[in-house]
Length: 288
Ligand code: PMV
Image (cartoon, rainbow, N blue to C red):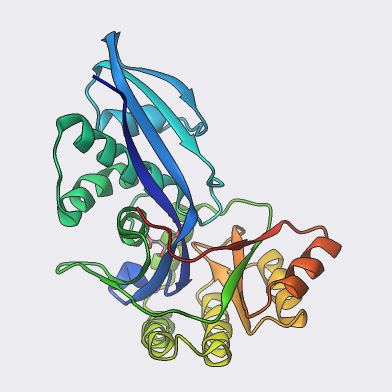
């Protein structure tokens, strides 16, 4: 047998994180970064011979999908870990795709999603499934957790880009999600407003000024629900001062990354460089 490869895409959440856990809509898109799992036969126990991902939970993730015997596994990834770019979901998607290729099967998106979600749970307690949906499907998605699951492709070309600015610290998604849960019901109105705002963004997607203003409002709601921090807010201010139409944290927060909506990325990239901040553009909508 020749080696088989499974691929899962990284993602960025445009808006709706945290509220999506409670059934509200979120918008997210795949980026041009991915994780690839290659498996090929070998005698004896399964062996992970080469991996760009190092995590104590990795073997448990492999156990959830692959046979314990008879395989060599290699993992390649150019996704930063713990930065809100969906590295664990990309791994989950790559693993279930590799398993399907091994079995010579062509499962539906829904079947792959059902298999990948428990792998994502190895890393995050109660994921909404948003990251897994984007890692598997690619493109730009409007997502609502099920049942019934909605992962609706958003077919729109937009005249803007996203610059990613890195706080340099990983946020702990499970802790941040638990923190939000502990502050309910006092923050339920803010979670509702985030959900409504996502639908406003969807309606105005080609308009960078309207979407930018809504992302700014989303950031202040994320501050209200307690998942932002001073490092995030410094990068948000830096991006806005450099001409971004809007900026907010993306992912769980508590560190991690900020996204800035721009029509010209150069001024934000320059300002980030001058401040010693790692920043890069992310192309929207990688294909699986
Ligand atoms: O930290 P990330 O990129 O996995 O994003 C988490 C997004 C949350 O909405 C906070 C949690 C979830 O499961 O959707």
